[in-house]
Each structure stands twice: as C-alpha cells, then as structure tokens.
Image 1 (tube, one colour):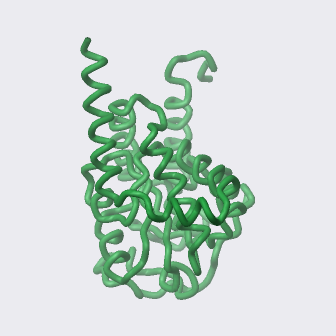
Image 2: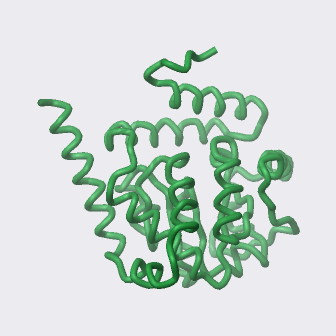
Image 3: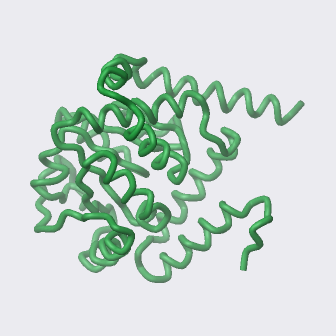
Length: 243
C-alpha cells in the first residue's frame, strides 16, 4: 500500500500499475524501460504541464476536431496508465481508437482491448494488414483505422512509425517527454508532457475551444517552437534546482 501523502505517490502508483500489467502480459519489459526514460525527462521539466505544453494540447485538440478521420493509436503502456483518460478524449474528439503494438501478439491485442473497453473506450477491431512502409510488426494496422486516418494521436510512439506516418501525408500528434527523440522531432506536433496530464488536457481543450479559436490555433507556431520551448524549460528548471 502506497500512502497517499507520499511525495512520489503518483509516480509510485504508475510504476506499480505498469509492473502489474507486465506480469499480466499487457506491458512488455521493454515498455517498463521506456516508462523509466520518460519519467526521467518529467523530472527535468519539473513534473508539471508547462505553458508551451498547454498550448500544444490546445493545438492538438484543434487538429483532432478539424480532422476528417482522427485516430488514437494505443499501446500497452498507454492502456495500462490512461484507459479512462482515453475514453474521455474519444468522447470529446470523436476519434477512433486502434491498438497498435511493436511487440505484437493477438493475445496482447485482446488483453489491451479488454482494458480499454472496461474503461468505456470503443476499440476498432478487424484483421490487421501490413499497410505501413515498415519492416516490423507496427506495419500492421487496420484499413479503416490508422491506414485511412488523416490525423493520428500517438502517445508513447516509436520514431520509425512516426516518420512513416508523416511520410504518408498524415498529421501526427505525439505525446513525448523527450524533446530530443526521433518521434518528437518527426511529428507534426509534439506535446512535451506526461501522458496522464496530457490526455485530460487535450480532452478539456476539445470541450472548450470554438471553431474560430480552433482555426486560430491551427496557425500557431510549428513543432520546432515547442521542442525549443521544452529545452528552455529543462534548462531553466535545472538552473533553478542548482541555485
């Protein structure tokens, strides 16, 4: 039992949840490593949603709302940590949700789908096909989902697939705490924020912005602005911590 007043409460709860899901075969051991790397970057930005990330979340909402066919791509870590938040975002954005995995087995897809559905997410189902120009299992996707989407939200993405999706002409919104990653540098828009803060932030924005504001947000700075802003936040936080 983790005491609620522990200064690392949220972090420890997330770790316990991921460890439990790893034992159940929902999360891979590689996924645990990826979470630890992201948590390190969250320390560096002060474990908070920065002003630039908040703006990125509003732009992400505008992109989803303006899309012809928005899709949220979900892996094991995302389902384990944020299934309820995904349900909220799906309801606010009308996006389809597709399970897409690097370490893919049909058993894992089914387990993740059950977690999502138990939280109220409507998950696309069907026969995955190798429709993306990749040599690994993330080439597999649903024709009526990721393949047909014009805008894709990819929390906790791998750089290869992000680059492939952008090369196919799709708008890619990444949630990535590491502004130096291939995903962050390749995406159309990168939200440099922690997953369980970013998803509710995008959901709130979907419910708050009107069409006029959405059009204005779509003209906001390009992705390089948000990556530079994140680096500035990290630099400033480190300088303050060492004072």
